[in-house]
Each structure stands twice: as C-alpha cells, then as structure tokens.
Length: 230
Image (tube, rainbow, N blue to C red):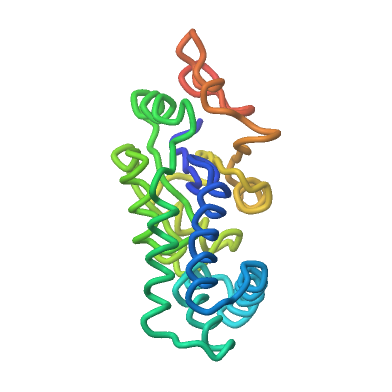
C-alpha cells in the first residue's frame, strides 16, 4: 500500500531544458557584450567547468551552483570576476524563472493525492533556495508535506543516502513509497534499487492528466491509489 509519493522537480513538473536553454542564451549575450567571448566558447567552458566541479566536489548540491561555475570560467580565462559573476548569475536565474510553466494535470494530480490521504514529498537535486523559488512560482509548494533537496540531504541522487533521507522524512517503509521523476537512472532505477516503487514521468512513462480516472482511482504506472489495489 502506497502511503507517500515523492516527486522530482526539474523536468517532472516543468520543462527544465527549455528554461535552462533560455537562461543560457541570456548569459551568453552578456558575455559576448562584455568580453567578446563567442557563445560556443562560453558554452564549452561551462560544460568543462561542470565536469571539473563534479569531479572535485563529488555528488553534492554545490555542483549545481551557477555562480561557482561562472566564477571559475572567468578566472580561467583571465577575466574580471567582480562584478560580472554576480551579474551573470542574476541574469541566468531571472531568465530561467521568468515564465516556467507547470505541466498540465500536475495540480489536479497533487490535489487528488492529497484528498486520498497520501503524503506528498519533493525529492530533488539542486540547492534549496532556488528549488523553493520554483515551487512558489509554480504554485505547488502548498501540496508538499516535506521537501528534500540534495543540499539538505548532503548528497545527491542517485546515491543511496539521498533516498534514506527521503524515507526518514516520509516516515514509511521503502515499499510504501512511490518515487516519480523524469530521469530513468536517478528517479526510477536508483529508488527501486533502494526498495522503493518508482515510475517514470514523460516520454515512455506517465503523463499527469492520464493518471486520474473517472472512477476516482489514481493510476501511476503499475501503482493504483484510491481503489482496492492501493
């Protein structure tokens, strides 16, 4: 019996790739104007910096910190860090958050789960402040009984410690918890390896409007909530 459903955030409740691409273009325009650095060179430098940061830090939330990545890119290219790093980070997040949109059916599904007595959690990589901003903009924070970010957990998906921390907040056994996300390795395979149930959102997986049935059941992959099988 499912007692708790934990959702990923980025790519699971809104189009992360679209927002990230738009934000990246805004920063590229700034870098080109300020330093004459072509967009393709800046993108390559940021990709390299992400790999270097992840290798140095390990599976922790700070690897997602755009300000840190941008600072290191400027330093490596002999460019002034101040005030540009702050300006670039502000430009990125302003563009990213400007018009992110909730996927269709998300609010209705969350409301139905809540009405069925299911606890709802968020289990997401990334730093806490930014994720809370997204929840406020998407207007789904009020549905969350608890929130786990990798900054709070001290470790990232797909590491076991992340899911252990999720379960400590959920207050249930692994088999009583369903994890939902858009990344097959992080949000499906990893929680299943830990003993949770899991279902993929998006291509090849569920879509939220399809989860709500006319008879009142909530069907998420092989999991049925609200009927005799829940």
